[in-house]
Length: 141
Length: 190
Image 1 (tube, each protein chain N blue to C red):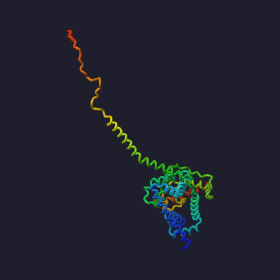
Image 2: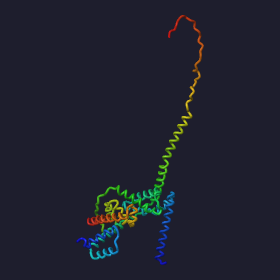
Image 3: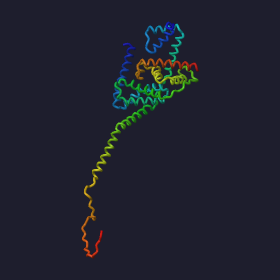
Image 4: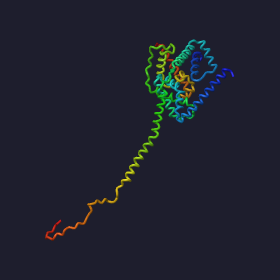
């Protein structure tokens, strides 16, 4: 029966240990089983070896010498860009309002005079024409 | 007070002082103080770069991600409710950026040749580990890296990855199993 198989119980306990935690009794049972079963002990040892390899392969690099300088430069640029992005709608609004104000000033300052312009020399004048004696001809229009 | 108790008292005092110094720096950071920013970078730079390097296995990319993480943390400092949580907030951003990078990468075929994985932690072993890690999904890979390489607690991993502790445990179990199977295969091949 698989339920009575101690190796199966060992695997089950190891899975349980990975997901939650074991009681002191279960831990002691595992230790005892590993002493009795070289296969399960080898399996556990392989697990520990893989974890040790992972730990040993951990990178331990340090930052490049100009890391801080580059980062601070990027932070300043980011701040500048955000300030510009924050104020740009206000700048656009102010520019549009300025253009509208200028246009209004233009319209008000150069308003056309409602009186017609009277040009000198083109004024209608009464001219005395010489009287032509009646010659008997009639002009038909 | 015995020498051991004295040593542990001194360690606790130093840790408490470090925490209160960090709190002051974060408060100044909120006001845009550049000196506080430099001090915070100095405090967390090494570990942030290491986390990114272990996750991405590329030192240049790791520096880029570390810089992005700092910039994002400074920019969105108003989102941080508790100043005491600044470090975990920064690591969370870094882990999220690493995850994004890993997801955008194309999966590489798992070819492991000419390596000696049974030896010590030499260059070859590192290369094998890198290639095997490439074959894990980003979630499993990051969980494994944070727990095994960064030696973070389950709670720290859960906080950094924004998932419950139970999820971390089950992902870690799956990641270890998968990595172990790959490792055994690589050992047989060599």
